[in-house]
Length: 144
Image 1 (tube, rainbow, N blue to C red):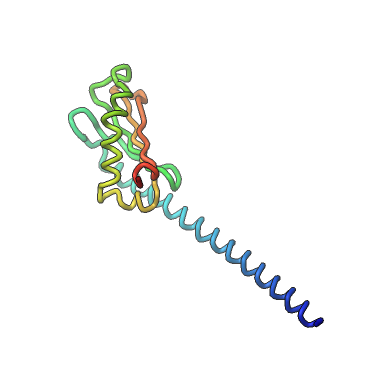
Image 2: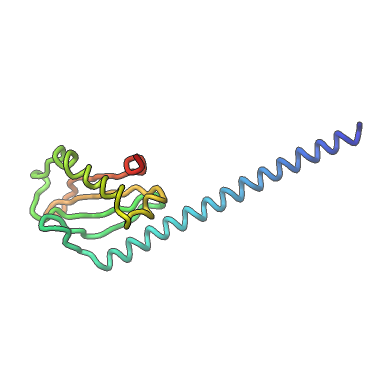
């Protein structure tokens, strides 16, 4: 009977050490994965910025892109012929926002972003460079 107590104690210590080692390994891999996503987003922004500015249509120009950590990729647009006071946010949310969400949901080019639960932020500035509005497409929106 006295041999059972040391054996149980040894098993408990072994299990505890195993769980702690697993948690440390899991956390380390998770951190490494996060850094890779953040680095990859940053590199994509750098590469895209080599090609900007790009005229999207007669009203809009993509000026640059950026990233924020491992969670956000940001597009910076200029509304070429509009001042901030002329932008109707309600109209943009009613007509533009649903089109952007659908595009993110269905675009093959954005699959990697969807697979990694990246939020895509579309920031708009007026013709004078003043921040006008932002449309954020979160994983909750494009995974519906």
